[in-house]
Length: 357
Image (cartoon, rainbow, N blue to C red):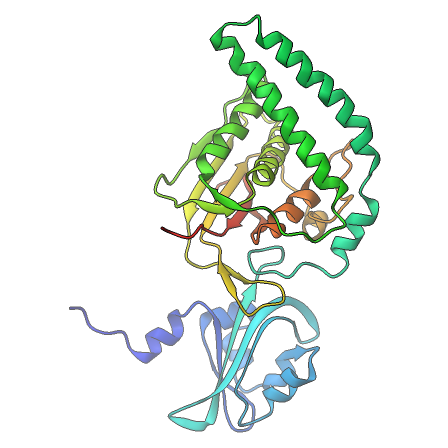
């Protein structure tokens, strides 16, 4: 058995920002994650009053910083560093049992639009008010005609050719369901979730996109075959995957060697709290849609999931807003980020797993 790590090694290696403050509320020690979070070296942090560095909108949290006996934990709270917005965090402060004149502060930053981010206030209402109800009438009728034509063609085709008409009918039915969903965006009804194999949905979405490109594009994959089933609405997740893959195709249209990949993996870190409940839902399954297009302009990154924000000249800015809405309805989360791979950007879906029998 190897040697146990020291307390110092544990303190330095923990993934949250940690600060030790003394009886005068002065920062006495920080770990490297805290230096990164505050954007300052330990040399500048140590010796400063904790309330000079951290500010909360909630008076209870501010009072806890200067209360020697405070034991407090808060989840998904907005924080500022020296007056600068630092997003949402999980925050914890408590005395150290060995010497209760000293306290430990723990801060876990939560990524914006990430797996544990709160939906922005008013976002749902904004989307609902501007959702074009006319879509239902203007699009459903042509869809019915397309489906009928596919059914007629089906009778005169051989078995191999029927795969295409089956795809047409399946896509028509999915779009019709999407229109129903768009028309009801003003509601907060929970998604109709069920256990689903993500790889089967990814394959369907990929074949649909590749077929639309007449074989001129091949979407790669890096799958973890051991992933458990996820608990999602299959039609909604299919729509999300189709939207993200279509965006990736558009983003790489002018790239010499387009590279679009779908990656699946299992992660232990993500979780969220269910609205109106103390229940926590783990989000260990990740689906990543990655491409080597130019990515989202820096000035739009913070608002990319807001309605009517688009990077496309002809875009209406509803696609990613709908992705965000559908994933949130399934108790999942979506995040945009620049990938570690050179010149790649990606959208990451965080999904809950189904109960294991």
